[in-house]
Length: 453
Image (cartoon, rainbow, N blue to C red):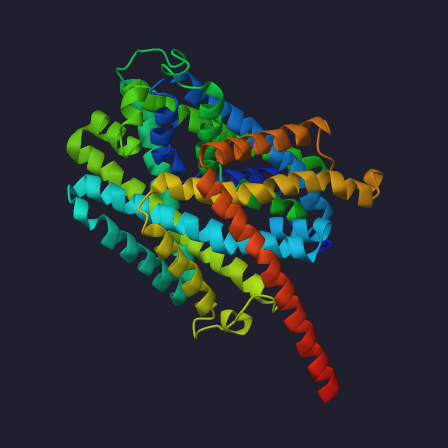
């Protein structure tokens, strides 16, 4: 029998069908954020449920529009590397470097720190020992470092284990909450609390929810490995994101069936509070441990991916100390890249603020996500549109929705949290002189080698 597996332009095997792609989408997005973000969401609404629930739907639609938009780039540019590659191909080398610069200095360390902090917060709630938070946070990040230095298999094992606990915790809370919950108050009214501005609250809430949807842009890269991307990518994205949105809506409805929005807003760990209400102290602690393992696995995954992005960025020899970042240990992993990303995460974790850290990370990455949406328009000017294997449906409406949604969230964050936002932008801009100096140094090295030859 002939081999029916196709090859992408980038050399990757085209063997992924619709069903497999849907599972990749769902698995790549669902994380631990859904257990913790209700606190930030219902605090922003003033303890009212309406805007919170509707914001999950809006965030899901923006994410879907974004995924369909980026999928066009992914099919057109079937190379590994995801967003950095798309930005580099459309905007040039410098912008590609800046996308990686922001990821390794802000996004990945911020996410590592946030998940270590929430792990420790959850432990403190379960144990009643408050002073343990900061030491445990730093110990958790040290464990991320050690596990990743041990090799990819160990890191993957923890990721798989965390996925099992995450799914179990979600399934148990959804089923028990829907059938055993005794809170019968409206889930739509009131829309917002007294004195709350729905527009600015909505922007804050969307930023919080985007943390729960984080990871979707990475799964867009699977378009280059699908058997028939022109036909299947939209099915995979719509199907996968619809499942994710349904799960997120169900867990939030389950939460609200157990506790009112005001109680969720006042809880340091909404998932744990709901579990305790449903199953009592012992049962709640068991579910709480499952949620902790989920957070640990997610943090470990960010340490793994972040170190690989830093390694890839260092290969261009533009970053300071690039040679050092490219060193592998005996377990064949980039040891200094792992240590750098985790060490920076530990520094950020000293703040001890989960929501601040996630907002910081998501704001920084969404600057480039919006640029990726805009890249679809720029790319269409450079290629023969008729020859595109996959075209974003309802173009240009879908990309415009994605762009406007992203810009709205960034604008609200800039207005409501100017110091954090401007700080992120300053760090981004510092990448420009670093890139220019790095390129100049690399060119001088090449010239010196040429002269020696």
